[in-house]
Amino acid sequence: MTMPMMRGGMPMGAGMMGHGMMGEHVEGRIAFLKAEIGITEAQTAQWNAFAEALRANGRAMTELRAQMPQAAQQPTATTPALTLPQRLEQRERMATVHIEALHRLRAALTPLYTVLTEQQRQAADSLVMGMM
Image (cartoon, rainbow, N blue to C red; front, top):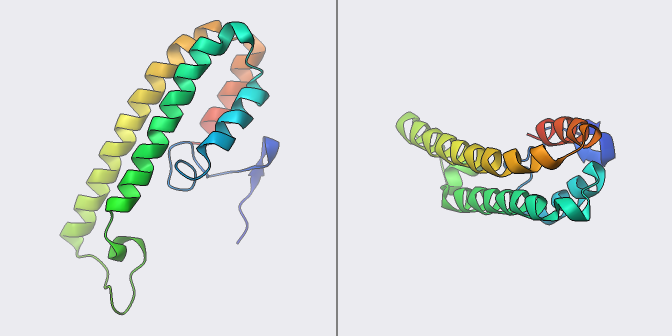
């Protein structure tokens, strides 16, 4: 199954915060966003803080995946699916990590957004949220 693509060749649903993105390809996504938004030298300090939030979120998602039991990732005959209480616990852990990631991202985006031009904001609005 192929994923629909969005502007710039990035797969839709590969989310800035989701399992499909962070960890593995975060540096490429950061470079893509920086180029597409058109970050200037004067905006570099705010951009770097935002990029670091993306990296931190990527690390958090990678750590979350590493902590997940194999049965939660791909149940097989030898590693049966998790029980309902185990699945709920896993979902709660995932939700907590996602909320923390959203807070980190919003805190870093706010100062960046204030220094962006209207055109850059429009690009950020469509690219960053479209990837979540």
